[in-house]
Image 1 (spheres, helix red, strand yellow):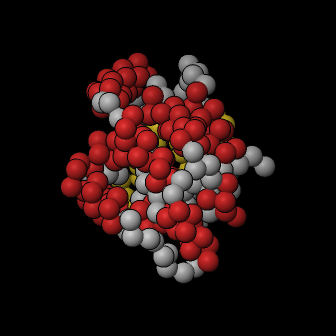
Image 2 (cartoon, rainbow, N blue to C red; image 1 turned 90 degrees about the vertical axis):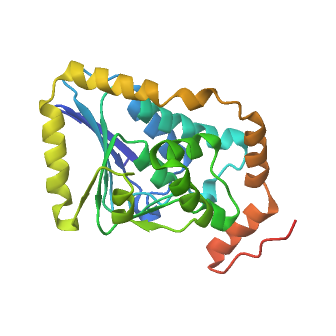
Length: 251
């Protein structure tokens, strides 16, 4: 069974995270397949892509046991998210359970997100000695604004889906038993909208969100790389697996 399942049924490109036994933690194969799922141009009958996940957790982030700490290691994930972002048709995320770190980023790179009230969202790298890349911080800043972004990234605490909905970070929220019905309503509406209009609107919105790509940030990439390869990062990950508080060093 593929860890990312992709299938086109009528107007919908279904993309499913399918590693529930690992809380859908993203390993290199999942990241590669996620990118491939959105690199293929849509066929004439497609109207949207639907991103869902198998199991109780949407996505717990990057699989730390298979993590590449180098700058090259984060690049494939950024490329997969960029492929989602520039996909010519609307991308709808359905978040049935927690979406943390990389899972949070997958959700935020969807155009519309319907989440269960039981779900939580968050960016927790700061709690284990890591830091999100420029690309990942940029997306959060675009959607949440500076104050909410600082709260989410600097505290690292997960927030209920209702909080993300109230802040305007996700578009729809539903009780767990109503999640599928809400998803179907969104899919039905998009499927009946004019295809040329959908593509034109998506293109305009994508272009307007790309201006921050041109800000010089090589020095920040270097600083973030040092964090990813630091002793604090190694200690934070060890502590996470050993279920104990990390012992970060003063510097």
